Length: 138
Image 1 (cartoon, helix red, strand yellow):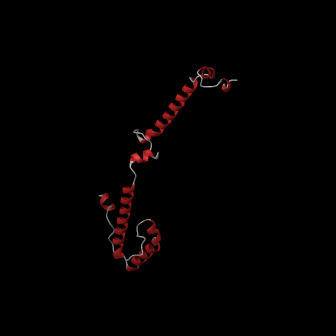
Image 2 (cartoon, helix red, strand yellow):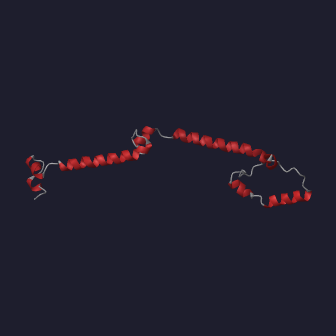
Image 3 (spheres, one colour):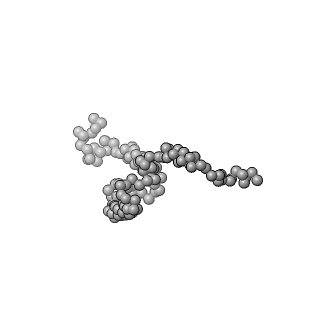
């Protein structure tokens, strides 16, 4: 029984003075047209209301056409890889940075190993690669 009382709408008539005061109160707190345009409630246009939908549809079609043109001119993935814009990787995008770090560390390890195993200047002199006066240890 209490649900019936709380969900009922007050349908009692109000006087014209109360109605006018209520309307004036609501009009005083009405948002500015610019606020409504900023919130995309009103269209920001100078076109007549009868032409606004057509203007909106034309603008949408223009944007669609521009997007299609841009996508048609878009270079292929292989070309972007050749130009070093995209990485040449089949790994997931979330793993590509870790893959790049791993490759960098592997390259550094390889270089360190090659430096550690390079021939000594004495061996290079014996093999005739360096002249005896070019020996960097002397």
